[in-house]
Length: 209
Ligand SMILES: [Fe+2]
Image (cartoon, rainbow, N blue to C red; front, side, top):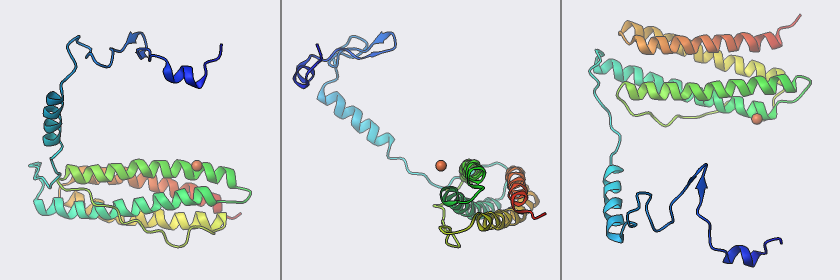
């Protein structure tokens, strides 16, 4: 017989199973001991509140880099983070709005690109943290209006942005190496490699015969 709404609501709930292991009744903890009292719960909440009270702040890692270097490179990476986030968002918008005979390959290619950029922003942000500073909130700006562009205009627009990213990253990579921050240097070289390959692929789409 099919269960009615009333029978479902009035039925005694069955213990919930997770795979082969049945979970304990709600009023008994899995060790077989009595459930925590309100006082226990309040104590645990206070402990949790204390643990969660920590706030992030700048650190001074003794990793062989001058504080001024760490600050300078972190600020520069903050700018790269903003540029990458802006390009990520613009690429996503182009992915949605692109039209024309090349819709499908461009739609798929741009999806690959915004996913790669999403991974990249995490790399920049975490490098800033490793250098001892807080990650800034990226300043996202999309120019020009990315809403109404032809497929060709989209490709040229993205090429220009990727090229601008690479130019900025090259300057910072060289500066980082000069100041012994070879980790940031290598990270940027890897990211530049991706941008330059992306520029090549985008350019191949709009190259005329
Ligand atoms: Fe999509």
